[in-house]
Length: 633
Image (cartoon, rainbow, N blue to C red; front, side, top):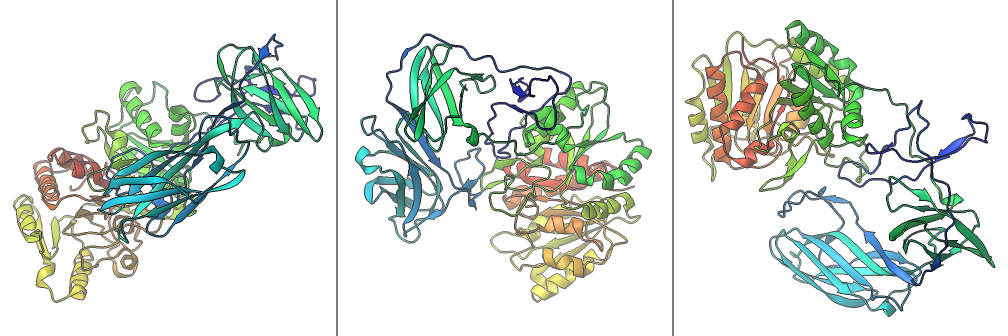
């Protein structure tokens, strides 16, 4: 079974009708190529005899007149993640090498060219990186094919005719060089070479087109043990009758597909057949049951399920019916076994439409990565995937997308995430949440960046007008302190003094605050000592929630994970946005918590998003924490 379709198999049990340890079965399988997975899951269901390959059929056939067919080689390297592209595509953000004023060469291995067929073509796609006009020269095997011209951070795509005589058996080199000086920089998206291929096997296998009720011969196999399958419908393949003929030191296959019309066949020697990448036992789950009910659903990577039990017990004791869903079960039931944020979204929407009691709150537990397929080799850090979306400034993560069913950029459930990577981190963060008690005396610390082209102090003054009267306010103005060390010391002193809320207003980067580079992720564990009282952090700057990086931990993650205190929850941005909408968001948050004492943090941050029309703010602000947690008593 694959993608809800039963797939035929061939069973080799020795003819005794029982499946013994040395027996095996075969089926035609093909992978997938999504942003999140390159593997397709096939389910073998016990207790059902299932479909079998149809018997081979002999057919009367006429000779197939084709000498060649269009054959395409694709070269798409994924070595650089570039999230700043402006064209807004839904690709994965990965590209090949930078193209600049020194030639970059990429090679293709070509075989079985028919020079009497249609002329080859070479298609090249590039992604602009710098904000100037781009001119890139494309050459093949030392001969210039043409120039691609495009501008700034747009895409440049061109197709070139290739003289058949220019292709050669073996390596063929495509050279790319930028012509507009040192600042002319782009990234390679893909190179696609299409040429006329003879009906001859490449390395003992070939996927090729044919017409039904005609007969063709495929040569150049090194073994007579050849299988051929009609894969026109890859989820319903059929084995095809064929003859194998010896030709000296090689063998050829004569085949005639029995179904009419255009067909696609796949032929391979037995040695080229592959085994499954992995075989695991699947424990059935019941997330699609109509009898399910919950107020709060936690979707977690399986390694964190045990660490969540204290939180589940506490919320249940408070009358918040809490259910834990293992993310692998979500993928199985709502993604046909494939990992993706789409499966999580489909599951959450299903709970709203079909569960007996639909949850209002959802929390994702596990880290995510912009490299879910581990192209860069840093390991599998994509434990519970996020959704990458295009904003005005960059491609970045939006967890809220998975709970936004009407497309207004406001989640329809109150959503948070614990971006943890190990069970120990999960246990520590859960302990903070379970042990959290809103302070008896409400106090806010406003940490305000130094004015530059942006008047952050005026944004802070506007925020103070909306802070509820029940909150005392302490302020730290970076521009009034002597230097970066003084700013850093003031922030740590305030953070360790047990405020209710730490509110940052200013510039931000992934790992620190301000252009002063203070309050850095790597320093928090040593300098924060507020384990007795962990505040909520409300962060109005850029990039502090860039949690899906593969090289470092964002400031927001570090605050949540800090063992000696840090934060019980952080609300901050995964991307970039303008300061004025950030200020609008900040003021809305304070108006809401003032008007609704006892509101949960999930409800407060969602309502604050609804109070601004700015799309960048709506897309990028993420809550790290438990959305059911109350902000005050």
